[in-house]
Amino acid sequence: MPYDAIILGAGAAGLMAAISAGRRGRRVLVLDHAPEAGRKILISGGGRCNFTNQHCAPDRFLSGNPHFARSALARYTQHDFIALVRRHGIAYHEKTLGQLFCDGSARAVVAMLLAECAAAGVELRLGQRITGVEKPHGFRISTEQGEVTAPALVLATGGLSIPKMGATGLAHDIAGRFGVPLVPPRPGLVPLTFQGAPLELMRPLSGVALPAIARCGKRAFPEALLFTHRGLSGPAILQISSYWREGEPIALDLLPKIDAPTLLRERKRARPKAEPKTVLGELLPSRLAATLAEAHLPAKPMAELPDRALDGLAALLKRWELLPAGTEGYAKAEVTLGGIDTAALSSQSMEAKSVPGLFVVGEAVDVTGWLGGYNFQWAWSSGWVAGEAV
Ligand SMILES: Cc1cc2nc3c(=O)[nH]c(=O)nc-3n(C[C@H](O)[C@H](O)[C@H](O)COP(=O)(O)OP(=O)(O)OC[C@H]3O[C@@H](n4cnc5c(N)ncnc54)[C@H](O)[C@@H]3O)c2cc1C
Image 1: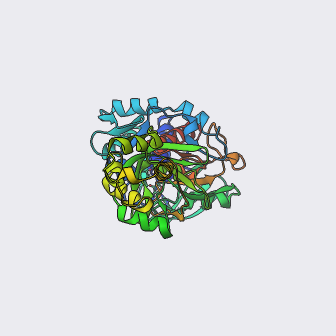
Image 2: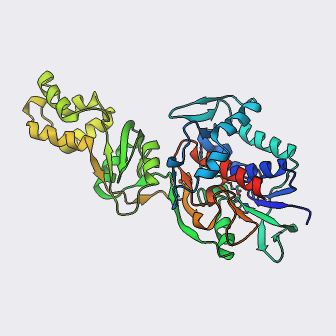
Image 3: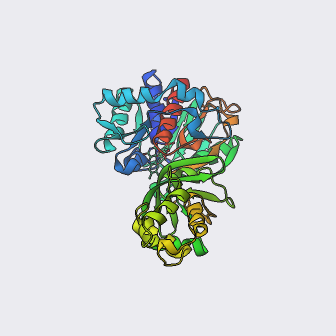
C-alpha cells in the first residue's frame, strides 16, 4: 500500500486531517470529486471566510452527545488556527461576537491549507468520482481513474447542505455500509418559511432588517433579523433554526432591552396627536412600523387609543409568537445537523469504534456549531485529531 491514509473530501476538515497526518510523516492521499479544493471555504462568510471564533467553547455546538466535541476542540483550539493564519500572514479582523474574518478574500485560507498540504507531502487528486469503497484488508477505494488502497480511511465529505456546490451524503452512506449508525440529518442555520397570514404580512417587508431576539424553547439569540419573501432569515433566525423542530413555535422580541408597554404609554402622553405608525417608526424600521401598526391598531392619534390597545401591541412587539411552516432546506442551509452518531466514534481520534482504521471528521459527524466560525473550528479540530491518529 503506497499510502498510510486516504482522505475523502478536500474541504476544511479533510485538508486539516491531511496536514496533521502529513506532518507526522504519513503518506496521505486526498480525493475529491470537485474541480477545486475548499469550495465552501471560498463562498463562506460572504467570500471572507469567518474561519473561527475567539469564544469557541463546547457549549456552542449541537450534538446528540454535548460533551463529544470537547476533546478535539481542546486539542486543536481556535488559538492554534489563529496562529496558523498569522504564520501565513493573512490579515483578519473581528467582525462581531468573536467572529474572525479575513480582511481580504477567503482564497487566502484555501491557499494556506494547500501550501501546508504541499509542505507535508500530501497528494491531492481533484475531479475524482468515487465509485466504490471496500475493506478487504485495509480500505480499497475505486474511482473512475483506478483503485487506491490504505490501512486508514478518513471520511471528510461534509454534510448535505448546498447540493449545487457538490455536497453529497457519501460519508453517511459509506459509514452506514460499515454498520456505523447515523443520526437523521436535517438542515441547520437555515431561513424559516411561513404560510398564510404571517407570510402575507412578512412578504411585503422583504429586505427589512432589525436587531431582535429570536427564541425557541429555552434558546435565545439576540442578533439581526431579516424579512424575506418566504419568511424570516438573518443571523438570529439562522441560529434559532438549528434548535427549531417542526410544529414548534418561535417567538420574536422586536424591541430588545426596551420596556415596550411603558414606552408606548409615555409616547401617548408626549405625542398625543401622532399616529401609532409614526411613533413605532421611531423604534422600528418604518415599513415594519407601518405594517404592525396598521395590522393591530386603528389609524387614530395616540391620545384616542386606550392603554389596553397599546399594551396589546407592546406585548406583540416583545413576544411575537409565530409557527414556521418549514425551512428553506438544504439548498439554503449553511450546515447539516445530525450525521454520523458520535456514540459510534472515539472523541479522542474520530475513529469508528467498530471499524478500526475508519475515521469521520467535520460536518459529516453529528456535531454542528452555531453561526459565527464555530463550524470551521469543528472542521479544523476534528480533522486535526484524526490526522494525529491515522
Ligand atoms: C454559504 C455557506 C457559508 C458558510 N460560512 C461559514 C463561515 O463563515 N464560518 C463557518 O464556520 N462555517 C461556515 N459555513 C459552514 C462550513 O462551510 C462547513 O461547516 C464546513 O465547510 C464543513 O467542512 P467539511 O470539511 O466537513 O465539509 P466541506 O467543506 O463541505 O467539504 C467536503 C468536501 O467533500 C467533497 N465531496 C462531497 N461529496 C463527495 C463525493 N461524493 N465524492 C468526492 N468528494 C466529495 C466536496 O467536494 C468538498 O470538497 C458555511 C456554509 C455555507 C454553505
